[in-house]
Length: 224
Image (cartoon, rainbow, N blue to C red):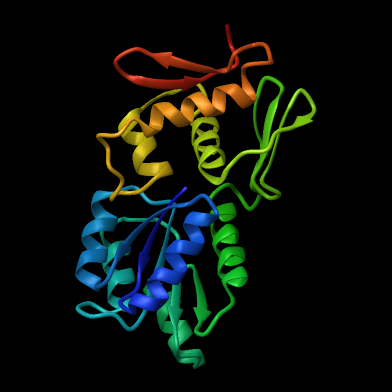
């Protein structure tokens, strides 16, 4: 899952970005409204966390501009304002939910998960391929009934592959969705993590699920 965090307060931004990355999200950051609009138009995000009081275009204007540009990414708006009229203004501008500062990080995560669930008709499905399952609501992974422990990045990689089951995903797509826009694309970290994941979910099981498509990328499929 890839998230854009729009926040000009460095301390708050670092807190949110670090917390989300620890939860296996790939995170980009924008410090002003103009940069937020540019990134949201260029990149594909699963959600946007948008502070209202930011330099340049404020959060209300950013949300309205993105909706006018047909960007339908779910928006969670953050603000120190808790007046009803401010919440209404944010929702009318195109935000999907509203969180007042200060907030507990656990609540931010819960609201973010709720926004992502709404994209799939209100229910976040269990992802599966053959006898492999990944339950996003509990973050548990099993293969043939055996629970498999994954690191945050291994989990994020498997989640992305399962959500694209049957499709060939490029190395660049993996970097963008599992890591973030600042990731060093010249390293072999993607190959390393594919190897880690294969050891845990494929090495002792049949059929093999993760396949290399030479010169293109990787494909997770449960067909021979």
